Length: 178
Image (cartoon, rainbow, N blue to C red; front, side):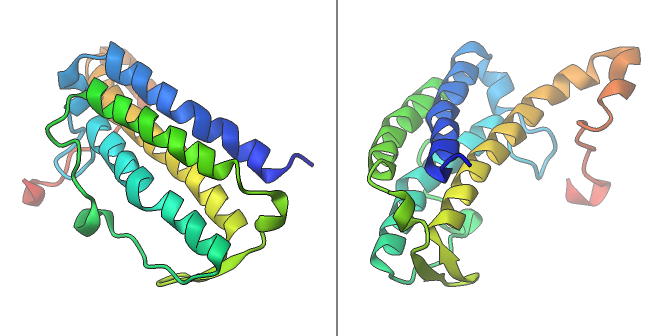
């Protein structure tokens, strides 16, 4: 069996590169386009990842290594909003820079640390192993979410091929949400 850190590390190493490539190659309007009124754009997804990179995941590793309880994170209330005015490339650069520090911290975690526990304010007792799974999954989930937002205008414009994208189309919000 492959040690968990060796499974998680490549995800955490490649996510900033994926975002940088998207941010630097796509038109900023496409990167900031919301697929529906209450959905996140790719820019929103990246901004959230940067927020959690600054204040959530590295801090939680520290809490778990020390066995200290830690609070929940509510992105709609606690997101720092850094990057709201930043362009996509600037935000992706910031992610690359901050992630380097997180990877340095992660390199200090050994397989023997994975069973360490701490109490999450809402979820109860969690392990460092579970946190690492969540971190990699969080990166991938929001990257897919951002790519799905970018996909929407292409689905809308592909005419008779649109039916092939039915699993990926984000339906418009009901009239009451406008």
